[in-house]
Image (cartoon, rainbow, N blue to C red; front, side, top):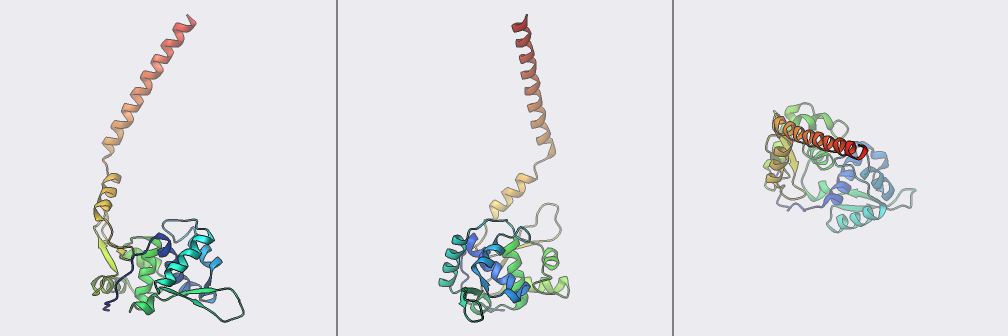
Length: 217
């Protein structure tokens, strides 16, 4: 898969709305294209979303307008309903296969994941035959002329590499490392801080007891 089309740089709202349209086109085709109400509800789902958000309808409407101007979505007419409905154009704008759309959709809606996690989470979007097929798709997406995804540094204690999409620009890997360092501080440091706090509390209690005795004496 090769592409000379430049990837857009989308904000969080644009990614969520685009990801929702990509997801629902496969998981609930009977309700696709989607109404504004349906898109809003899907954006605010408590499951299969990272992070969980609470968008109002106005936010979704404004985001749909931006995505439409970028050519990533379009409106659909026809049928018995008079409501305006929306569908994504990602596979039209970019030469991606259904397998690749499924992987990108998962990364957009759930954040960075390992090949194993993508294989587990992809069931309703695309039935991959094996983990090897998932890895093959990841290689195509990362090795394209215009890469769609990036392999992240391995997390401490984790065997598999994680992948992230590039539809929000190139991630700050230094920030990623700082986050990992923050959560991997040695337990001895935490224990030392707790001991210091406990000592200070004990000293405060002793001073308080002494003051009360003096006042009551």
